[in-house]
Amino acid sequence: MKFLLFLLVFVLCLIALAVILLVYALAVGARVPKRLRDIPQNEGRIFAKGRAQIGAHRAGAGIAPENTPMAFDLCLNAKDFSVDELEFDLHITGDGKLIVLHDPSLDRTTDAVEKYGKTKVLPSDLTYEQISQLNPGEGFVTDSGETPYKGLRGGDIPESLRIPLLEEIIDKIEAHGEYLYSIDIKDSGEAGKKAADLLIELINAKGIADRVIVASFNNDIIRYLTREHPDTQRSMGVFEGVLFYFACAFNLKLNPAKLPFKAVQLPANQFKIIRCGTERFIRYCHSLGIAVQYWTIDDPAEIKRLSDIGADCIITNVPDKMYSLVNS
Image 1 (cartoon, rainbow, N blue to C red):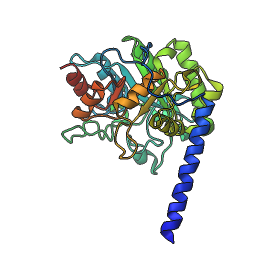
Image 2: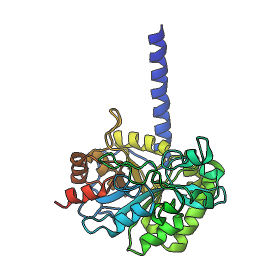
Image 3: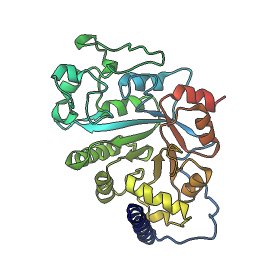
Image 4: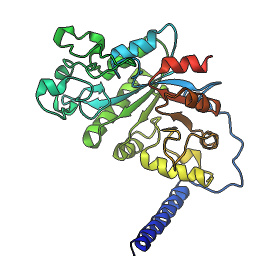
C-alpha cells in the first residue's frame, strides 16, 4: 500500500513538472527543434575567449580569509597568477551599508560569538562600525592546518583583515583594471530588495554594469530584480534553473529575447541525477546566448575537463592553482 501511494505521488509530481515545463516553454516562446542549431559566436565580456576564465570564489577563499581586502589584494597583485572574475557575496547592515560577507551570520568567520556572548550574530543586527571591529580571519585555516589570524583583536587586526564595504572593494578592483564581477545578494525579503536597489545604483554609478553578474539564491530577490531592474545582467535563480535544466534535457528551442538571465552559475556534476557539467549543456546555453559559469571547482582534473568542453568561467577557491593548470 505504501509503495502504491509513493508511486502515485511520484507520477503526480512528474505530471506537475511536465505541466510547469510546458507553461515555461510556452511563456518564452519555445518550440522543439529536430536538432540543436548552429551555435552563434557569443559576444560580450562574460563569455570565454579561447579558455575558461578564472573566477576567484569569495576572492580566493583557499588562499586568504574569504571576502576580505587581503584576499582581493592577493588576487589583484599576485606576480605568479591572475584572475578574470572576482566572485563575492553581499549583505546589508543594520545601518543600511552594503558589506562583503557570505554567511547569514558572523559566527563562522569572525570572533562575533566571543564578543557578543551569543550565537547567530547577524549583520542586520549591527552597525557597520561594530562589524568593522571584528576579525574575519578568525576561522581561516591554511592547507597545512595553521590558523595565522586566529586571536587577533582590536588594533592588532590589520586593515586588510576587516569586513569591507562593497564600494571600497569595487574601487580597489577598478584601480587594477577591468575585471568581471559576480555579486551574490544573500539577504531575502525587504532587506534583500534594499540591497538589490543599492547594488544596482552603485554599479551603474561606477559604470561597471556590463561587467557585473548579479546573483541570488532567493527567488523573491530574483523576481524583484526581474520586475524592478529588468536590464540587470543577472544569473538564473534556483527555480528558473530547474526549469531550464529540463528545457535542455528535452532540447526545447527557447527564445533568447524572453530569457531574463544572461548567465547560469551552478555546480557541474556534483549531483548524481542532475548533471550540468556536460558539453551538451554548455552548447545548449551558448545557442541561447547564455554564459556558463561553474562553482566551486577545486579539483585539477575537473577544472581541466570543464575548461576543455567550453565553460566560460570556473569559480574556484584556489585561483593560483587553476592559473597554473590552464596556462601550462
